[in-house]
Amino acid sequence: MTPLNGYLLLAAFLFSIGLAGALTRRNAILVLAGIELMLNAANLNFIAFWRYGTHPEALTGTMFAIFSISIAAAEAAVGLGLILAVYRHFKTTDLDEIDSLKG
Amino acid sequence: MTILFLILAVLAIVGASAAMAFRSAVHAILALALAFVSLAILYLSLDAQFVGFTQIIVYVGAVAILAVFAIMMTRSDSAHHHTEVFSKSWLTGLVLAGGVFTVLAWAVLGDKTQHAAADAPAPVTTVTQIGEALMQRYAFPLEIMGLLLTAALIGAVVLAMPLLSNKSGAKSVTKGDAR
Image (cartoon, rainbow over all chains, first blue to last red; front, top):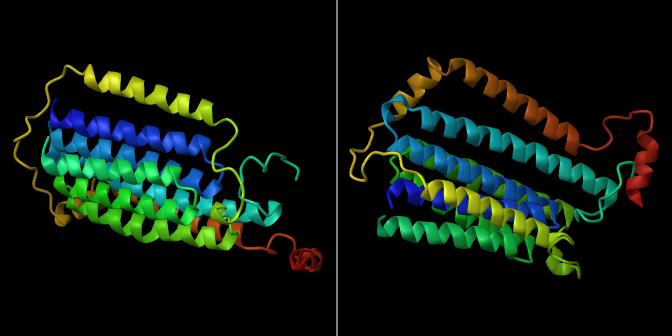
């Protein structure tokens, strides 16, 4: 197994853990944490492909990872703001109890 | 496949699994920070120094702290309640995640293309190069990113701020919040 395959397998496993958490946790904040984990796994793929790819001097993978981290930061801020707004309305962050659109 | 990679991979997997399995939300976020730190060290070992330090600053320094603040402000720590940790449809979620991992691992292990050898010389990247690329080739994406971050900042503040949208009904909402 080449080093690249090792990194890709690790990223795939982290992505699956994040997906499982996002689909099964009841706490909305931890669902968001699972989504962050999935974004991190994608970043690991970008960096590994950049390092073991054919043209590392073009910096494409690094740039992609930097922009992806910025998107993730913006998404975390908006997501946690949404969770606070939902909590103010429903008085809970349990996603199984937040089941009505009209409130 | 070095010892360092194996140690960091185990740390990242343990941190991520603990983050998704712990009952207490605060403990889960701390375990998530462990996974973020081991991923940052993985980036450093892949010669991506700038991304590694950005990862520590943004994820460990900002996202994890933000999540802890959200937990404090919502009192959603289920260690103090007798609620279930996992949703009613947890089996479906686990099966879906397992299926996704199976497909991804099958695709990775069936890969027959030739990649650079493990001992390929490390690409030399300085912060100067990254800055020049951001200011020249990636200048337009950088502007868009600035716009997006500004919009996200304003949006997060507007979403989290109470009593902004209905000035006329502000009195009744204040009453509602007090109860």
